[in-house]
Image 1 (cartoon, helix red, strand yellow):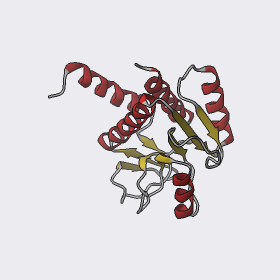
Image 2: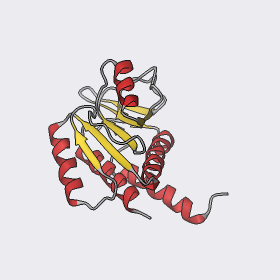
Image 3: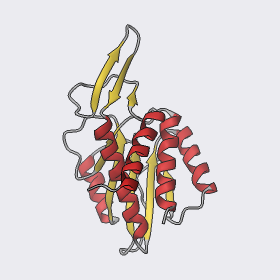
Image 4: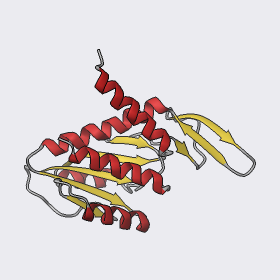
Length: 188
């Protein structure tokens, strides 16, 4: 049975998803995705509305991964983003915020090797991975086993990664994601 406080948090998360436009996709998305709930088309534009239950579930998975990362004595978060504006925004935000988890934000996959007892998580923001088999072998060699992707590509094989089906071309969505990361890593 869900307690009242947990129910309030769940409602707050859903409300935040709606207010941040996190449930909207502006690009043409295929109906074959179970994440797309409805599509509204006009002569010039197409707007897709993501399934709120599916989106809430995947954001909660991200929150749980971040909570798990935070609980480890030795931890590290890698964020890969190829958009220069988003890269600058992320760097500025994390430079000024006080987060106890070390974070490295780059435009490419991590190349540094950390001690084997360090739990590492990788977040790929709209970043396509070319030659996935080789890329994941490199990640596993660097002891990066937790991977969360956020993109709007339909993929047949997620290669054992967590995925949030969404596009991050809107600053409101990036800011929402930053707040989720910050709140999760800073709460006790």
